[in-house]
Image (tube, rainbow, N blue to C red; front, side):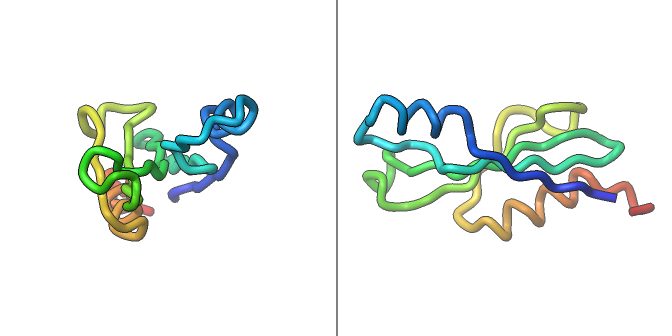
Length: 92
C-alpha cells in the first residue's frame, strides 16, 4: 500500500519569512511511501527554460535505491504515476 503525506516545504517557509520576491519552490512537499522506499514530490518554477512561468514537478528518492538523481515532469499527475510505478511491488 502506498501512503501519501503533505506538508509545507521548509524552504517555502524561509522564502516567506525573508519576504523574498523570487519564489522557486512550491508551498507543499508531498511524500509517497511503501515497503520499497520513500519518494518526495515538489513543484518548482522553471526559471531556466520558461523564465519562471512554468511549473515543473520534481521527484527525488528519499529512502530506498529506486532511482538516481531527480526526475522532472510538466504535470503533477504524470509525476504521481511514475512514483506509483517505483513504489508498487505488485502486491499493493
